Amino acid sequence: MGMVRVRLAPSPTGSPHIGTVWGALFDFVFAKKNNGKFILRLEDTDRARYVAESEQEIIESLKWLGFDYDEVYKQSDRLDIYKKYSDELLEKGLAYQDEGAIRFKTPKMGETHWHDLIGDEQSSRGGKEISFDNGTQDDFVILKSDGFPTYNFANVVDDHLMEITHVIRGNEFISSTPKHLMLYQAFGWTPPQFAHLPVLVGADRSKLSKRHGAKGTLEFKKEGFLKEALINFLALLGWSHPQAKEIFSLEEMIKVFDFKQFNASSAYFDVTKLEWLNGEYIRKMSNEELEKRLDEYLVDHPSKGKLVPIIPLIKERIKKLSDFIPLTYFFFTKVEYEKQVFQKLTAGHPAREAVLSLRSEGSNLENIMSRILEIMQKMQKPWKADVFEQAFRKLAEELDLSASQMFQLIRVAISGQLVTPPLFDSIKILGEEETVKRVNEALAFVKSAP
Image (tube, rainbow, N blue to C red; front, side, top):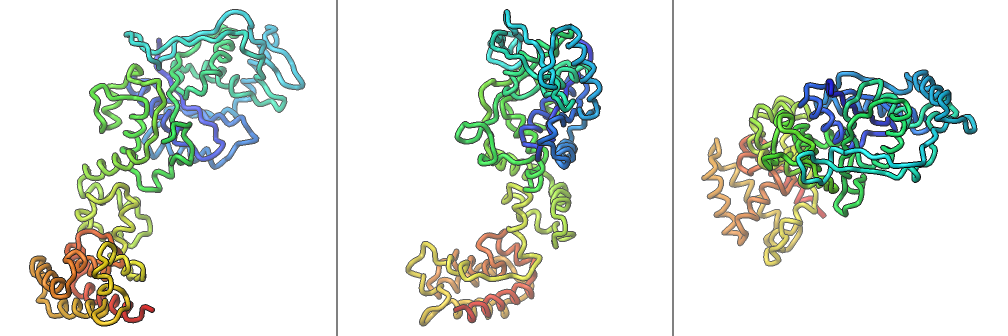
């Protein structure tokens, strides 16, 4: 075998499915492992379904993940080549005209078989043997009446001319492989080796689709997933690290990759696991690196240049970069209070419901917040965490509230949210004056609430 040459051959008919870059990962890794070449071939001959924007999305997806290709081709630029080879089959009597199209004559005797690199065989060779009865194969179109080739034909011609040594693709193409091997035989060409990847499935074990959380690759980027985590997750779909590692880099994968470590069974696409893995990568980052990633992600966000003190507070709390936004937005913008957020403060504490309700007779939320504001205004600056905690624990006890309710009320007053980074750390970032101002605004909201 000469130099390893593999190709990714997506059809630009829409946003690239995550399955496209899943296949690209193994193409790229196998090429790098063997000092080979990774080729991108845009199979754009289905003109009825062609979407021009899809080409750019495919290229952007590969660029984001760092799957740099060595060569790129478009099948629509190669129509003369397909015509030449379809004419050759006509001249040999191995194809015939049919209503303006050209059909290949499939041999009806014998079997077509090959050794697939992915399978369940417990031998040193690995993989599995696959065979088809040639009698089950119908004559098929290789060149359509519009002059464009079919997938089956262009695929074989291109793989031969581009000297592809290994075809790595989904196992939905297993049924097409006999047609491809018949074409190789008709031309007298040596076929590449085949590795058919297992099926990606969702939680119900049916083929992965949007209802399972499958998205275009760039949507994962938009949602705040790190490319390293996404690559690591995709690697674990069907393939296992020989040392049973769950977290490893692309470079580590390249060093140990082998098709024998594939499981031919369906691979479960678990979005929950992807989020967990992404969170693990975030926590392993230095604060400086996380600041850089957030700064790149938060385009036109008011946090620009203000991330340094916040990162240590949120690093353990987020699973995606996008989680940063709802968790910290109160630092950078005016708080908009909502009645239902205050009402949730009484959840699970029916005996205290009247005390913390927005409007009630006697001791109510308005009175409590007035007391909070009074204590904050009198507290010596700079505020100290232990003094702050003691003061409001005492107030909670005096008002027959739990300490957690008291501090949660202060949290809502400064942020409008029930979940934030640690309360006193958040107050330190806001500053005492801004904190008092927000408690005052929250009090005004409570007074005006219907």
